[in-house]
Length: 199
Image (cartoon, rainbow, N blue to C red):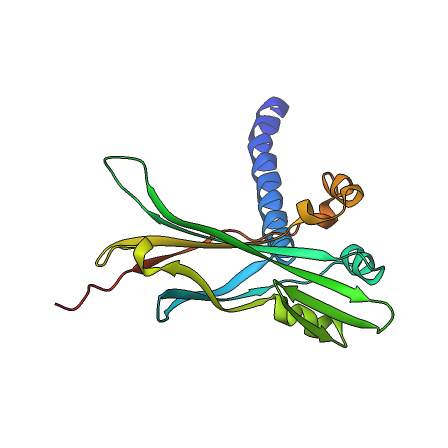
């Protein structure tokens, strides 16, 4: 009699443990996502010679990264953009693969944060304002007209990450096994159809 009772209870215990594990996963999943970078928006807009990317991202710096930048060590955020045309008969065509990096730094003498993108530099009094600029990409020319064919549909992909490879060597080594330095987004993909030329 006791053996039968135990056998009946055993599957119930397994189900209960599985339910608890599922609830724990659901509760922890949003928290894990909040620690990364979210691609909120990514669109392509035509210009005189091709298309520009406008994109916005959402993320926060954890305490470790804030401390690092406030000690005068710059952080680099790299955005990658690719354009692919799937082909069933051969390897996928990839006419565009480009990236750009933005440097976020703190100037101790002026107590200002600086965002540098190529030759352009902007200064801000707060880290929040500086991050707002890093999180928004406007009019980044990513596609030339000669790189795509009219009437074709492509898959565009956008990704942003904290690029530790651009930091000084000691920080690169420290970042390898440190979760505080793992800040990245998933790839956001969307369809892009090139308008046919007027006849």
